[in-house]
Length: 329
Image 1 (tube, rainbow, N blue to C red):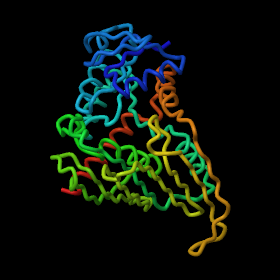
Image 2 (tube, rainbow, N blue to C red):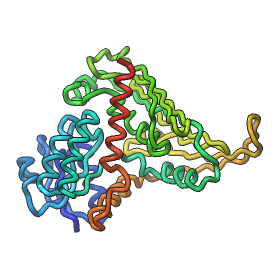
Image 3 (tube, rainbow, N blue to C red):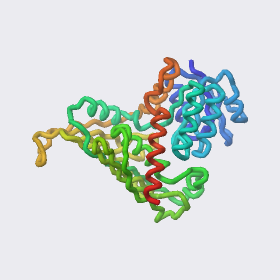
């Protein structure tokens, strides 16, 4: 059993705790949060140090506000622990490079919470694309939006010092990670970043970004927004022989509706193609949290590099985010 400690026992800390327990491969030794809590089977300690300095704990889970992620990840690695950290990995790509330097010296496993790669629809889409049956990717389009109200102003996410940015770091980061997962890399970036509605300093409420891979020609278009007024997830991948669309995403709140994957194949060659019968799959249960924990525990137990959500994945993601912000400026 892998002995785990959790720093930050809000929503994400509790989700990770549940996934650890359900895996039957880990045991939660201790958890810390500034706010008191009582959860059966979870021992609350009074300080973060009681987790970081506990030699019995193998793995540290960092589930804190964004500005703590780099600091606690470094502390965990230096204390000889494997670390699982929620997104964003840090405030920028340079921070991730600094973390990687320590990671390499310690030889410990470091994984980031790039959870969307583990959703059933995404796993199936990856299988279909890698099979080659739909040809190669031409372009991708992602829309990820939600609505917030005045209570948002009371949240740490409305403070640039604590959050690092707005909707792009909060939610759009997941869509960008999917773009990288399927498109590998992007060399060219065009963007428009705005806070037209909420008017919070440094906290954008909309991001429009166009990306291009110069080697493959693949183009990806992102709209990340907190003025959607309805929660929305839509991820489209168009290929030479068909397309794959994911509409809706299964979450704990069910805010994004059913997670539906549609696979369509061309019946004739372009430019005027007829579409064959669609394949449609609805994913009623979100198993992504257990899958993600399984990937992390596999790396620890087998002494293998992290396969999904590695620090290299994190660096590419934060470098792309840096370039999106800078392109608007």
